[in-house]
Image 1 (cartoon, rainbow, N blue to C red):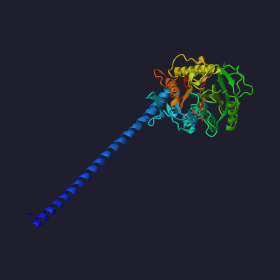
Image 2: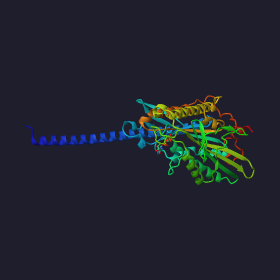
Image 3: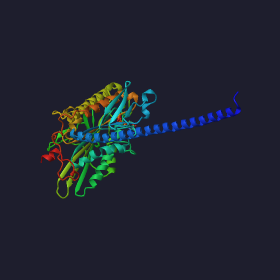
Image 4: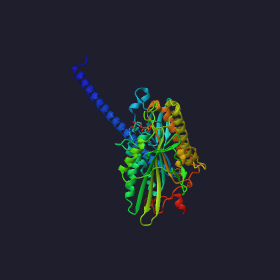
Length: 430
Ligand SMILES: Nc1ncnc2c1ncn2[C@@H]1O[C@H](COP(=O)(O)OP(=O)(O)OP(=O)(O)O)[C@@H](O)[C@H]1O
């Protein structure tokens, strides 16, 4: 039998040991916590370093990419994904399967046949992109026509993919056409020693026939001819001098009312023709009388969808075949130019023949490929992306700027916006 005093002492001892054990555990826990915090902080510093390096690399890649684009002869390809719309319906078919890469604004990811396909362009605009953002990227291209460059901007894609939205746009959110003219008015207004004259024509190519959209009595008998200076033009085509946005809007209203539209299963007001807004900028220096001339061609192409899907027959089938022919000719021409091939097949369609002077040489071309985000359109989206990719991915090879094409315009040496820019090849030769 233990004495009560001994029990009390043992109890005290046990209590003391327990307190020490508790303190020891708390100390260990604090130390471990500190170690974990240090490790996390190390990892996050390392991550931040990697992220910084990644962004630096991205910036560098962009710089090199821009240099490469210059070398490739100024042909760029953008891609724009339109947001979901009511016409996409609901259910499985409306699921969004097209996503811009969150970390790289030049890549697009598409879920197709249970695989993720990856497409690269000069720039990808997601569904939330605004008209402002898109125009910001094309602004420099647009104003280069003041310097005497010829510029073409094409909107490509299946019916309902957003081509007209990008080029024309609704009145509360105007697209490239109106913004470009506004920008030209602002830029030409700033040049005190220069007087500018801006003229527009608006035509469509429907079933390989040209129609004047600004004429009261449109005729389909219009042809592409060479004028005395060797430049391609359409005799009899209405040209309107525009001095302000009101003039421009009046012109658009007339032209759009005349546009041929026909219904297909895919879009009630599907445009089955290519619409071409041609802006000519004539400049004259009031001190030296030096003249400049540049052309800006803004093209809303007809829908690129394949015939079977549109349920086409009869007239619609003929339309679809003509559209396919001209779009593939356009792809061939741009592909040949970007690859610096010696033969460029301009004559294979009215569209490329008419634009011959504005494609190639020192001209600048931008193709904006439009895609729907919906799963039910994914086949057409993939076809459009392959079209854009074919143009975009031409290997550099021995490409430099193309030789000056027949009839291209030289940039005047003392053109106002010329200072600090590389001179056109023609100008360099002088
Ligand atoms: N970026 C966008 N933001 C908001 N709405 C858009 C956008 N792109 C397209 N839409 C809408 O989607 C619908 C189809 O677009 P749009 O008419 O521009 O297609 P399209 O490719 O020009 O078709 P079509 O070849 O038939 O002329 C329109 O209602 C348009 O307002």
